[in-house]
Amino acid sequence: MAVAGLEDRETDVLVVGSGAGGLTAAVAASALGLDVLVVEKAPVLGGTTALSEGMIWIPNNAQERARGIADSAEAALDYIARAAGNAFERERAARYIEAALEMLDFMTEHSEARFILAAGSCDYHPDLPGASTGGRALDPTPYDGRRLGADFSRLRRPLATTQIFGGMSISGTELGHYFKVFRSAASTALVARRLARYGWDRLCGRPRGTLIGNGNALVGRLLASLKARDVPVWESAPVRRLLIERGRITGAEIEAGGRSVAIRARRGVILACGGFTASDEMKRRHYPHVRDGKNHTRLAPETNTGDGAHLAEAAGGRLNTSLAQPAAWAPVSLVPQKNGDTVPYPHFIDRNKPGFVIVDRHGRRFVNESNSYHLIVQAMVEACRPDETVEAWIVADRPAIRRYGIGVVPPWPGRTGPHLRNGYLKVGATLEGLARSCGIDPAGLADTLARFNANATEGKDPEYLRGRNAYNLANGDPNHRPNPALGPIATPPFHAVRIVPGDLGTFYGLDTTPDAQVLNGAGEAIPGLYAVGNDMASVMGGAYIGAGITIGAAMTFGYVAARHLTAQEPQEKT
Image (tube, rainbow, N blue to C red; front, side):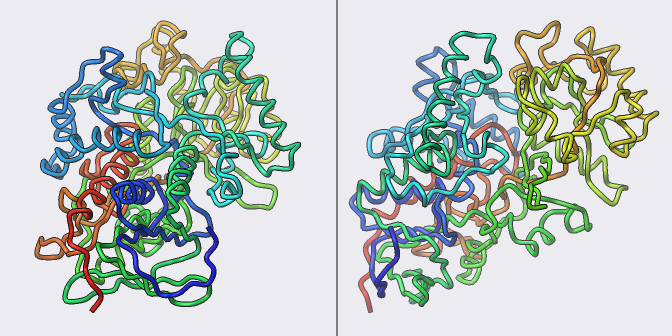
């Protein structure tokens, strides 16, 4: 909806931000009978969610129970407690687990948001009490972007590195079919249909494919739900300050249409600005390796500059920096572009497979490669503590990359040539040649792989116990024996891709009540002010415990905030 003819206006609820948390809050508040306005700083909608896999972590959900998977609220709460350690907040965590099921039912009834069980998705710490080996993670179902009409162009595009052919999305629910193309008739047929659909979109002059998946599909569904309810959503409308009357938040001053506009919110303001991954100043303050002068990149949008924290702190709110980690980490490779820039690519699915290892510049392994991406970065930062640069290399042999791909390099029948020519993919006819092309110590790499291969052939990893837990096995290749997560690296030519530390979003955030109200320095709720998504301190205590914990919590507390606001008396204008 274009912003035209703006004037100062009133609404019941002002939502600041258009990721899953903000949009869920807006849908819920509208469905509960409140007047809602959503404002977004960026010129496009969807925030970090639109770039993500879009999964949500909902323990004891109906699809899980229908599959006969045993789970309970008590087990999930115990798991969060064990993972969060000293940062565990029982009341907020219990509210999450209880309200997540309510949110899912509510959104199924009142919106177009739809999810499907992410088969095989396992909690990231499966050996902890209360962990689940599958069933808590849900994937958003694909969506036909044509249903948004002209508003499809307002939706933030996924990262270029997570699309193929310049604009085709692959849904997480269908990714497995692309790995089985030409080996399964059903998979080949599905991929052929998807390619034909994408080709038709481009022939019709569309800038990208309209069959969208992952977080893009979730945002598209939420935007369609708001459109059906005539809820206005303004992009390019940053909030400059909150309006305060007698200690209560009564609205905000925004910049839109080239001028300042005062929005009065009779019930309250919900901050869903996406955290501070794009704020160099806040990262220097809160990311230890950045504070030490080390390199870092981000996967979240450039507009996530900590606006929610700044706005709330100016009103007395406080940032919680006592969590286990300040952000959700991911190893990232930097993909060269024709214009000379690089675009990040998150390594979620390659390093876990047989035939891959990760080494530092000395050629040494330093981590179980099949552990969660969050733990990989923590180990990489520690391994590179004496070095000027935090970097490592994912190393594989030819059969492994042709079977699974590596980074943005596709599996067969995709081409490796373009990635070799631009320097993204390194190659060597021998391990020594590969090491020299990467700047890795040749002797260290040879020694590491000699030991690794001797054990991997037997499906063992005595150094890092790779392939010993359910999460490692779930992310390997079930058809590979004797260990789905392990295979030797023995057949030349050998290849490598450089990885560096990146983040998916921040865990440090505003302290809130279990109803998402922002707390002040005295631990009291600030009337009329709420925070959800990455503006809220992680309910997991800064631990990354499973796929979908960020968006699951964002949507849940967006719903909780909307519920709480309906019970508040509207503030009349003074």
